[in-house]
Length: 324
Picture 1 (tube, one colour):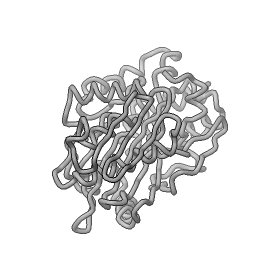
Picture 2 (cartoon, one colour; picture 1 turned 45 degrees about the vertical axis):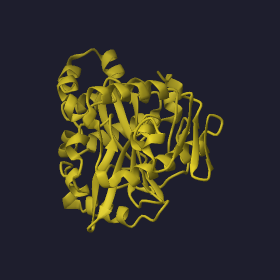
Picture 3 (spheres, helix red, strand yellow; picture 1 turned 60 degrees about the vertical axis):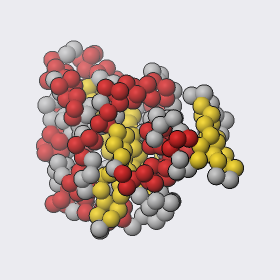
Picture 4 (cartoon, one colour; picture 1 turned 90 degrees about the vertical axis):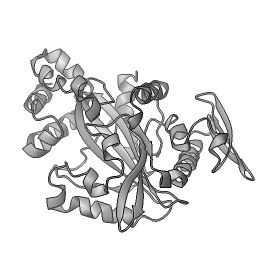
């Protein structure tokens, strides 16, 4: 488990503005974001001390529920494109432990962190121990969704998603971008989702952008997918009756750093979702974060609080943060 100082120094606190409003908050990727205690954002693929633990958790989830991984047949080229793109990102960010080399049609991938050296030929799945998307998905902490652009729309036609925040990738496979985001309140009325789709469809090959999204989770549980609601849903009621100390330890601010990459060869869009969590007990040690969180939660519209699953205990969070 990451120590509290490490969590704080690299935590992507999601409330930098003066007031809350639902927006796309998209910006070019790769630049550092400085916070009162550290910085984050310089890498598209972020590897930390939880790397092996989270990959093992992904493997357990996939073994129990294979529907978390899906690739529609026409997305095979995009999967190879994704694998090479993420390997290049990792090799550039972590050259001491990772490298990608090419000799004609043969490639060599090295991931010393996991003890992997793999020779492969692009397009020949027999040269990999797994399908390309499954292979690279087992070596990054990010969830991956691939969007195919056709007929003037975007479709979620492939991915590996084991750490979903109250949604089901297996249910959403093959849906359009607007259908996937249908349950989110205010998006259609505000026009945000339509603008987001138009922005994505204009991305040029190789362009990479990022955004953050947030919610709250009870306990340090990465997998709060719809499929497992029977396991984590009751926590939203239980947490209202626990002690003050346990409340601060158990309630986590959950932040997704989402990267959007127009893949250079296939033209599909690679949507990466990396999840970070910080307990309230650590969040309050940074006064600027505590004050911003209180302000955002207090003014959050009820329908958004309900959608994020925090409406039942939001008032206690605001009160707890204010007292600590």
